[in-house]
Image 1: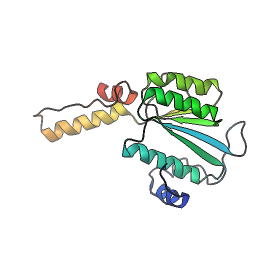
Image 2: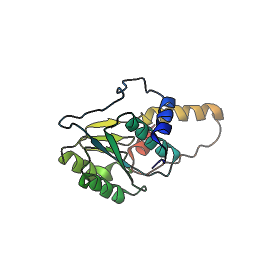
Image 3: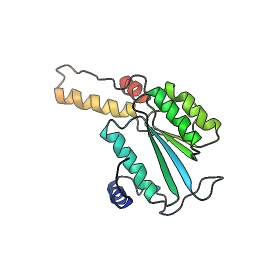
Length: 180
């Protein structure tokens, strides 16, 4: 989807932060019970933001380091019904693992449960789903929002008004940022 070659993606990979922390060595990888080619299904919220497309490029760059990894990418178009259907489509295609960055936390529980019921690893990124999963990866939205609020208060010198734009209502990120 990024339209970049593996050479371009590998050059991009070298610019990414944190690649030296617990890196997988270059070459083929395996998952328990599976040898040979591994197909990763990636269900993205939507590609309506540069951060989301950069996430895809980072996944594709990592896959280029491992010749037995193929990625099937689906775009949720910021629509919970579509993303639920996309995940079921990935299962029908026979993927070996699902990466999911959910549009909305609660609404993607059926998709997450379908993956877990199929006995496949489910890696949830950025926004959580309140059900079983294999791994959840996120930044602390509470800590991040607290830092932003402190910076704004300091910059305003204690005077002025601040408008909070909630973000995608119902997403765990929006809920946590609002808490802070």
